[in-house]
Length: 475
Image (cartoon, rainbow, N blue to C red; front, side):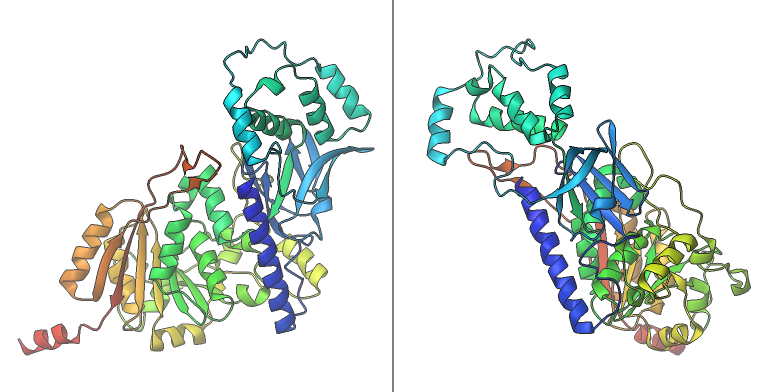
């Protein structure tokens, strides 16, 4: 419950910040502190037991247990709101509730819990399915009478012959287990860099290259991504890095998502961030051959003929799958395309801007003249050494770069190449380390099941190699 309270506080603070920013800018767009029809949301069921991405619409539903609940009550609610499943005339539905500061823990003072814990233990308890006198038929009868999930949990506790004999810790576990089954809670979370990365890492880490949230944060920091940045990004993780850079830049700079070949890389995750049209307009795509045509000839890894380049990602994107929920059994959320964008236009009264449109020639010329202020590479399935040799000349001098890879050896080889070519200084390979602790009375320790691996990051600063060039000309 401490984790749930922390998430609620973070979402509430983010909503307040969004509201303040909207009032300062005088924007006429949708208030992004609350949900609206057509926005993407992250539903946290029972404090992280199940994480679901969904898009709010009149027909959207979520399956909780063996029942389906409509997501209609979530429209217009602030991010960070907590919902419970309640029975009504039309069946089960989601009802907004206030977050309880004590959660589901058994209310005991510290001294009382210690004294009770000293005289109780579970040695005499036998799990023979006879302790609970309330049958399933009785529970269904309570539901038909309109009893809430909390009422059913209280009835189960009252009809348990062994509950009072359990230790305080066992009572908490029992109550939490019954609450998840009969009174599930749904937390409405804002899709952000942290929440999206954590969700994918927990459920489908291979789809984002096994990138952990602390690794992603370090990647942005080492690349010095901030307001007014012109960042060059090679993202083959579905758009997670591009969306994170855009979230940090905040619509004040440009993000160029480059690619090799005729087809742009998919950046569908960007649409989960619910960016405004101003931020989406700053996310551009350009093939590497267009960026390097006036500086260096393309290498063998790039397509030599710019005329072979296909349309932008917005034109070549594949249609969405029918299922838009991310959990253990189904595929990841791919956001809507033209038909849903038209629905958003009707709701907001403004023409939507798709992220990832093709970069205009004048902006490409500006990048060629001034160079990019930072470079981020996240393409674990490509040759890092050849990539950095192609992309590094596009950076401005003294601009930082950061490269992510799941394994160490490709980055070590790339680092040696950069040292030999004298194209960069300050080279270092970092291994992020994150350890999450459980902080509870008399049982504070690191989580028993944690991930000890977060990949590696090669970072450095591009420099001019004119000294070596003059030496070559003299000889």
